View (cartoon, rainbow, N blue to C red):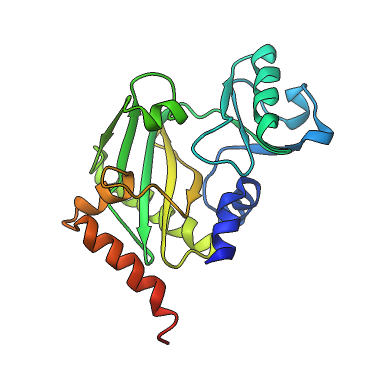
Length: 218
C-alpha cells in the first residue's frame, strides 16, 4: 500500500519503526540541510560512518566516510540529492537481501561486490557476485528471515518487499532498509530468491498480482 511504501522509502521513519519493534539496526541520526554540522561528534557517532539521503534509492548519494575530510565530502554529496539525510555507524560485514511475500520470507541472497560496497555502480554494472541460497548456518538464516518478516510487519507491508541486511563477524544482524518496489527483471534479487524455491518469473509476478487484488475480493 501507499503508506507502507512511503514509510519504507523514508529511512528516518523506517528506522524509528524498526527500533520501536525491537528490530536490530545500525546506530544512526538524521540531519537536515538547514541544521548541517560537519562535527560528527554532535551526532554521537564515530568514524567510519555511512552518509545517505533519507529518501533516496539505488544507493545514489551514499558514501562511506573514514575521517572528517571524507565526512564533509559525504555531506556535500548527500545534500546534492535532498534536504534530509541519515548518518549511520558503519557495520563491517557481509551484505544480504531477503524477499518477503505475503508475510513469508524467501531464501536469502548474499550480495558480494568485487570492490567497495553495494553502491549504484556495483548494482548495475555486474561487478557483484550474488549467491542464493546464501551460505549461512541454518540458525543464522532463520533468524535473518524472521527479522525480515518482522521488519515488513513494522511498516505495514502486506504484499511484497525486500529487506536489505548486514551480518558482522560476530553474526549480529542489522536491518538497513526495505524496498517495496525492488528490481523485477529476471536477474533481479527477488526473482532469484523465488527461483530458489522453484517459482518461475511468471509465477512470481502472478503471485504478486493475486495478493494485491485480494483486498478487492474481501
